[in-house]
Length: 259
Image (cartoon, rainbow, N blue to C red; front, side):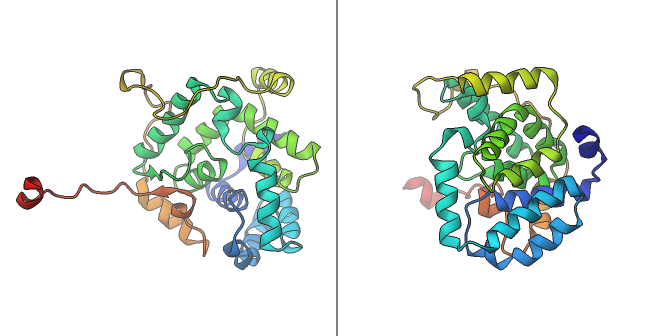
């Protein structure tokens, strides 16, 4: 049934859902409080499997201060790896393969005319949802689906511990196809054994000769789609969660060359 619901969502509805989910999975701040009414209005227009969990979470947000929400967010997502918001962590752990997987996300953003800031890893769920909502549905959906097993592990973990963010993950997975057989097996393995372990750094990811080809093709729309989609949600911008347009190269003058 979940696969049928996901496939039945029209592009505008799915983009609106991803935009709201992205905002609710980012670090809570004052802009979230200011936009509660708008977010609630959007959630109410979504199909029940997608919108009802968001409405429940927004009801929780209204009962907490920004300080309390931020503390809960850090305790949930920063201190417990089982709820890591970084999608590649579940498949690769802290291994060399994860570095290459992160490059695939960066290449997908670059193909759409965007660059990720150095302050955020490109596989943060909030960033991926923001990207997918902003006229990059095909590429974004593929990135999310490729990490469907990790999303399910996160969703089940949040649900098992009674976290209010479980509602947001319920809504995210309702926009995606149901787990396939191999993915269900992967979920069971991740729950039993956890992600792979290897004590290595992630930067600089890999030497150039080992960089993989992008796993997703370029998608029409470009950077303009990001700003247009974000404009419909005051206080929220794709650039606030780490995306920014490529910066043009500064022309070199003779004076600069001599320096």
